[in-house]
Length: 347
Image (cartoon, rainbow, N blue to C red; front, top):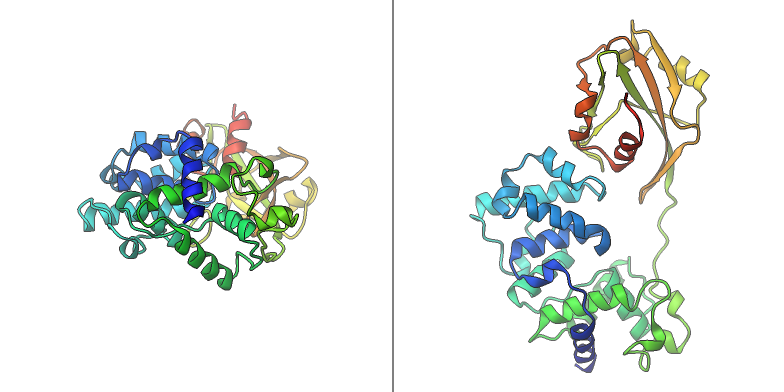
């Protein structure tokens, strides 16, 4: 109990002023928690404000087209979060008449809501003593208690959840959960934590045994695969280009992209021109080919690294129905393509 009291006292004096801390409305808490999954506050805050402005209630979000939701989400990555957000909004608005589930167990039924998010919403909105465990919490607990069980193992997940549940202040679960997350984010940081001015440094095992850099322990994931992406950027004389909607499962599902050709390795202009001559989009079409970026742009995802080149194809006309270049900014695209569109002059 001393741990939780010390922690919440620190929080009362050091917490950041954030908009979702000024409310207990489930829609806003849920929205903030989904946005902040795998996203730092400084990056997520503008997105939260944009979503609240455009979709002030769950009913507004439920009525939106998925493509508009994805467009507003553009740049945050992990687009399945946005698709799940939209699906859950429709479920709450239509099936639950706009009323969010009011306990941990039922919150888990929402698409995209796992243990951490359900615990956060249940504690903050409904005062349920459900302990949160995220990256910040793993770090604080593993260092303070000197736990070297890997945090990305099933054993670690159970051990840290049980410990957090044991420590939580059952009378004030919202304050405790927000305090331990804030402490991990701003004080007990991954690198260069403020150990010498830490309220817990007397009892912190990691600090007193010089193991700060070693904890928490994480099992190394498999090496990311290396892929070579080649996007075909068509430009016709009537100022149109080709965008294709990605179908099927995948991180970029339902986002738009330029026609894509994947190669086994880096490829030069001469070889690439020969390779694409028989592509359906180029049959009976004369074209001038140029390479926008001589050095591949490396886009790192959690499981793969994309070595990307953008090939510019000037054509008289397109062989398929294209989209107006002046309208290209309205399409939801992966951030990799969004950055290219921002930097490339389509004149």
